[in-house]
Length: 195
Image (cartoon, rainbow, N blue to C red; front, side, top):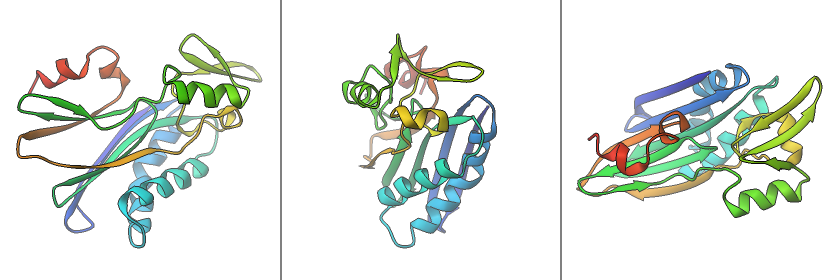
């Protein structure tokens, strides 16, 4: 259900990377990996990278059909600046000589603003999951922001990404983009220690 894309020479002089952690089927992650960078490239013609990411995430989320969804983390590297966006719990980490800096936000119910939005929309939270009740059963979702997952949109699970820009430093060595499959088991420092 997971996909990734890594494009060197994106828009001639940039690099694009995306990691998509799908759930309830592969359709959402496959569509995002195939199309999100294309929408981003189109919007980049008239918008700054952060606004282009926001618009591309919204468009891709609307295009996903069926019941599947995906978390996403993407970056566009150009001229020593990392422009980034994420929904859900796919993480972007900068690893330097003596430190790690997390750029993304893990959108889960343990973040007060994320939790309050879900509750404000009438969502039910049990433990670490948001629940929606649809036939033929109940479905739980850990992330509070995703692409797709249309059954959850009415209870506050949104596709609006966290975006930002980071100026790379001479001591920065690696950009790590990975899902909760890694970061639920290793913290940032442990991941950084591999490099």
